[in-house]
Amino acid sequence: MTTAAQSAVPDGMRADVELAQRGRSEMQFLQAMRAGLRPLQARLRDRLEKGDALAWDGTDIAGLRAAVDGELAEDADLGIIGAALRWNRSVLTPRAVDAFGERAEDLSAKAAPVDAEAITDRGEEAVPRYWRYEFHGTTGGWDGHEHMGFVHHELVYRYLLVPSFPGDIFGQRASVARLAPREDYTDICDLGCGTGQFTMKLAQTYPGARITGVDLSVSELRYAQRRAAEAGLEWDLLRAPAEDTGLAEGAFDLVTSFILLHEIPPHAIRKVFAEALRLLRPGGDLVFSDVAPYRLRSPYQAWHDDWDAENGHEPWWRTAATTDLAGIAREAGFTDVRQEALGKESYPWVTLARKPGQERL
Image 1: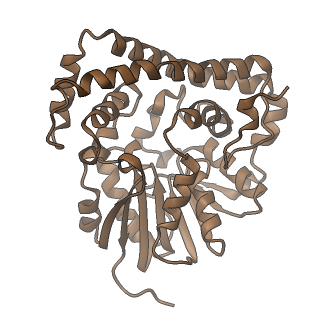
Image 2: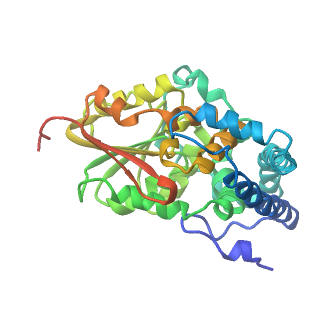
Image 3: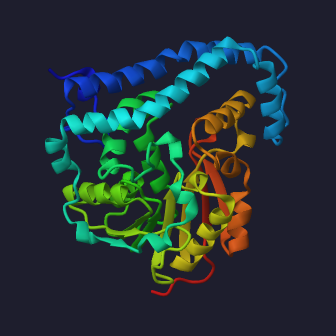
């Protein structure tokens, strides 16, 4: 029997992924649990917006957190929301991995790369220390399971992120891809490509370009290769840090990233911009999309972003949401720097820039 959760498959996800009854039920329970918190969250927001704790000048996020957290110190709704979300995150990866295991013989065939040799690996010596963190509470990290790329993309996204995310996560990626200033590109480098969600939108938007995807996760790259091959695409995939790819200087006319910067510490953010400049040809373009700056969020949303990041294993979210990315781009040597908000509450927030000089034809 096909459930509504199975039949409503979002763009960018596989329609042929079916879980055993137990695994499907557990994933749907975690989804329903998140949905069940919405009335409490709405009540909490209403209460805060009627009070004084959200008075904010748009700059001092620490002050906003202190005021609201103090107001809610004994609040039962926040206690329930926090405990439920922390438990949900702690069991999400193990439940998804177990669900995969119940159908491992069938799903492994769908998850494995078509050509593992198509992935170049710079090796463990190139992996930075920050990569060891369990981002989003993902048990074992992004390589905690051989097929974590598949597990995360096809199970966690399908059952949890897509239903709870306010907007079309795949449509947003397509909008950012179209924001690049030219109609055509020859060589594109996508930094922090993961399973290729944004990379796929780049390939669809610029079908004549040769695309290189860079990520630190072996399992994510393995599933990216699978997805590209099944779409009839050939990507050059590289396991390396975005701030030190080892790729040839001046090899690309477009360098991109989508929600990478908030996953890395501030010193690495600066290095990523410098590496992007090095990779670009004169006249090449940069398109980096990430979390919205707190200063452009409503006071409640800024507080919630910061609170959720602290409770959701996002150690550098605040850095990305308070850093002057346009200033970093200029310091790196970019010109024509501008920023644009594409959606509600300024997300996706996109930084665009150009490498000085005239591209050699």
